[in-house]
Image (cartoon, rainbow over all chains, first blue to last red; front, side):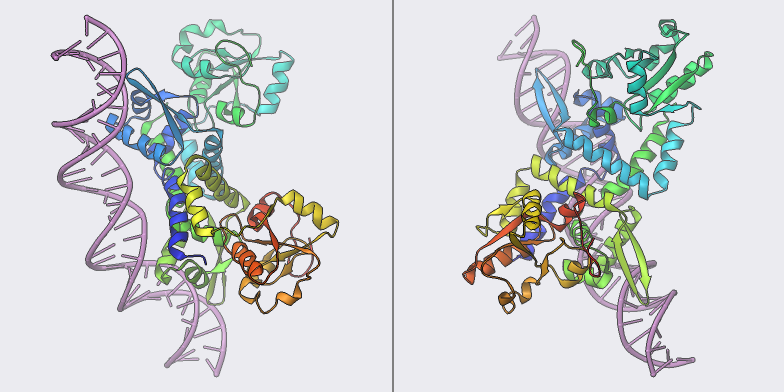
Length: 223
Length: 223
DNA sequence: ACAATATTCCACGGATGTATGGAGGATGCC
DNA sequence: GGCATCCTCCATACATCCGTGGAATATTGT
C-alpha cells in the first residue's frame, strides 16, 4: 500500500512538467506563446536563440504538455496547450515576485522607469465605456490581430515615431503591451514623453486581461 | 530599451523559482508541507530521503522563496511561504494531469482502486450540515491538529483496525486525507471494506479544501 | 525526381544538479 | 565547559542539462 517506487514515479511525472519551468529561455518562450501561436523560427529569433536550441526547448515544453503543435506546410506552429498553462505561468511569476526580492529588482532593471501613471484593468474598462481615453496597443500587428482589448488602436512601437499623428492630442492615451514583463509599453511611454506627449500605462497587459476573462477582440470581428 | 542581458536576468530569476518545481522529491516535500510545518528530520523520513539530501532540497526551496523557516531550540521548522505556493503546486498538478496522459496513469497506479464512491467538497459540506454523515480524517494526528474539516473525527490509518469501533455503523462514513495524491484515504477505504464496512471518499483532500477557502478547524477551537 | 525550406535528431564538451558521507555550527541540557 | 542533538556546509562521484554545429526528415514547388 503506497509503494514508494510508484509514489516516486508519480511525482517524477509531475516534475517533468515542473522541469519545463526551470529554464529562463523556456519561460521566455512561454511568455511569447501566451500572445498567440508562432513558428519555431519566429520564436527562436524573438527569444534570441539558435534554431536548434529553440527547437529543443520547444520539445521539452511539448513533452511537458505545456504546448501543442500544428503543421501548416513546412512550418510548425506552436501554441500553449490551454489557458491553464498561461495561468500557471502567471502564478509562477506572482509567487516569485511575492517571495523573492530579486525578482522585482530584476524586473525594474529590465523595464526601466517611464514615470507613467498606471491604470488598472477595471479603471481602463470604465474609462473606455465613457469614451474618455484612447487605448493604444503597441505590440506587433500579428499579436494585435490574434487578440486585443476592444476598441484599441494598433501602432507597433517601432512605427510609433512616424505614426504619432494618428493619436489625438486632446484625449489621454493608455498604452499596453503583452504583459507585466513586456517592455514595449514602457518604451512607448518614454517615446511619447520624448515627443512632448503624456501617456498612461495599463498596469500589466494583454495576458492578464485575457486571464481575467475580460472581453477580447480579434482581427475580423470584435468579441 | 529592452536590454537582452537584463531580460535574461529577469527570466532566469523566475526560473530559479521554477527550478524548485523540477524535481520529484522537492514536489513530495511541498506536498507534505502543504499539510503544515515540519522539521527537516521529519520531512526526510516522510519523503524517504537522506538527511543531508533533504536539507539540500529544502535549501533550494527556500532559495526559490517557496518555503520559510522557524527555529525552535535545535530544530528548524519548514513551512510554505504562503497559500499562493500551495495554489501553485495544485495548479501544476492540474495542468500536468490535464495535458499529460502519463500523469493520471501514474496516479492510479500509485493510489490503486478502492471501489469507493467519491464525494465532492460541496456534497460533503451539504451532508455535514444535515448531520447525514460522519467525516473521518485518517492523516497523522499532528496534521489533523494543524487543520481539519470542521466536525471531522481523527483516526490515523495506522490505528484504524483497532479503533474501528469508534465509528458508528448506522451512518455513512466519508474518509479524507491530504489531497488528491494521498494514499491514506484509499488505504482506509480498502481497510474498512475488508472489515465489512462501506465508506465513501472525498474526491480530493485537505489541501484542496483549504485552497477552496472552506472552513477549517484547528486543534483548540473550531474555525 | 530534384531542389529548397523548415524543423527535428544526433553527437559532443562544458556546466549544473543530485545523492552521499564527513566535518562544522548552533542550541539546549547537565 | 562538555556533550548530545539537529541541521547545514563541503568535497566527491555520477547523472542530466544546455548550447552548438552537422546530418537526417518532412513538405512544397518545379
